[in-house]
Length: 306
Image (cartoon, rainbow, N blue to C red; front, side):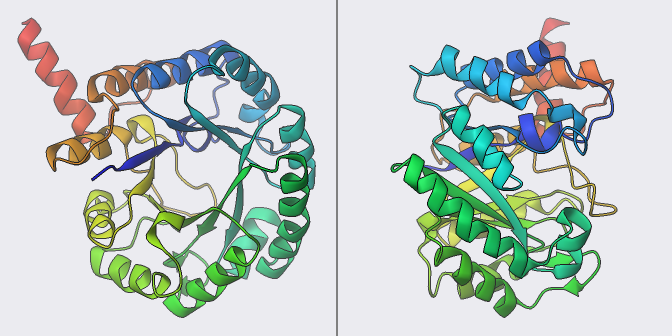
């Protein structure tokens, strides 16, 4: 089985870091991820620099990488927070975009100062405008707090399904079922995905798991059994949600690569290359290694060297 990795480290992994990361450091990070065999990468977000200073260089970063890597068969996209973000994306000639909503008005108000309905109404303007300018364009939508919200509590799967249907009615290409808190366990993943897959096909669904309770890989395994083959991950396990207290990093790309390869599934990404690439950015940030597969690989290299 071919399992696809959507690398979100350059955006989701770095957006909340307090230390300023130079543009060239980010570009080198992404270059190294491309060299590793990663085929789909979320580069940045067109959010206001006032709210996320770390991503204030999104336009320059995207333009640089597009010009440099346009001949390679790499799928790049960026997150759009609103209509202004679409204008910037179009100027950068992006043909793949990501949008963001949630199952919870409480979470939406904390994160975007809008209700879920208001966000979807905005999508009704953004998506047709994007399609008009980029007829072959591709749209993904993150559905945050698909399982549980830090403010509203557990989310009834039927509510997640109802919002999912509304999003697909807008003509999106990829729905990202997101465990924002990292609290879901495999049985909950089964329960939700089985409901969603009664009305949608598996190729339209991606999963975005956090590893707060160490359940991310177990949840990937359960999703694969149900036919899901697209998973977000972040090199080195970087990132997390600032609006979700206690949520640790994303599923680490290294752990996902190890699992995919060990199970005999197919993906061209190199554990070696991703592990060394993310160590560079971790060292720059002064952060310890938390990813188990990365740690095991690098320790094995040190042992051989000794």
